[in-house]
Amino acid sequence: MNSQSCSYLALFGFGQSADITIKLDDEETRKTAKIRGEDGQQETHYLFYDGETISGTVNVALKKANQKLEHQGIRIEFIGQIEVYYDRGNQQDFISLTKDLARPGELTQNSSFHFEFHNVEKPYESYMGINVKLRYFLRVTIVRRITDITREMDLIVHTLSSYPDADVNLKMDVGIEDCLHIEFEYNKSRYAVVILSNFFTFENGCTSLLGGRDMLTSTITINNLH
Image (cartoon, rainbow, N blue to C red; front, side, top):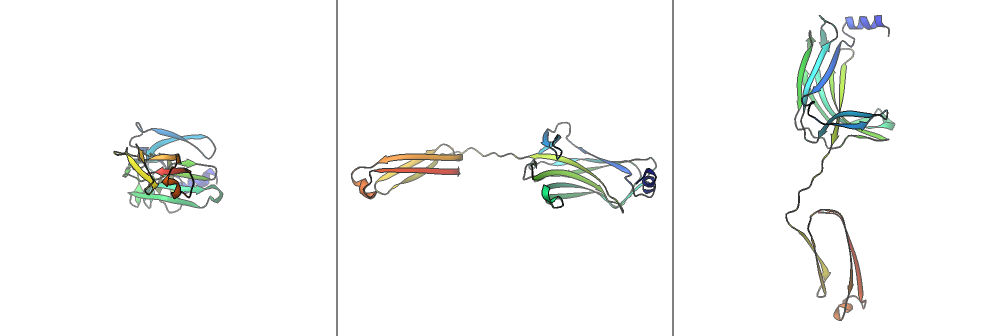
């Protein structure tokens, strides 16, 4: 399409006649993080955590003075999306929140719209792998009759895992009735892995309970102990 055709489209309201920018309320104080882009280069975006509110302002600037922009509505979405690289057309949105910014009408001057997504659930971390991508982003759409005007802003999400300290110790009992009793006591209620190896020598009456064996070896492995 040549420049003359583009001018005709803009004249009749079909061209890209406005620029959209998204500005977060706390850009000056919010931390940023890096993530690998599809081209392999590091990208920097604003960092959010699960449960944080996302708020800001959408600015729509008309490209020409004394110009009007007819639209069928303006909206902003917060989207969490998983995309598998071998199936580019199959994108799964696990979060999709929408806020309407303007009803159908027309813009005759530069306009700003405030938005807020309150205490947004973000259950997974942003991820860029070899075969799959998980991303969060804001998308602004000016709905038009022919071609919508859109703008996206990527965000990075990190998750935090914390567990409260146990107030009491954890106890466990093992043993053989009327012969052996062992009590374990742990000073925490959560361990990644616990491995116990115990060796016992039995005498007198206890050996008969073990079928004549005079040695018992026990190994106890506990994963993700709660």
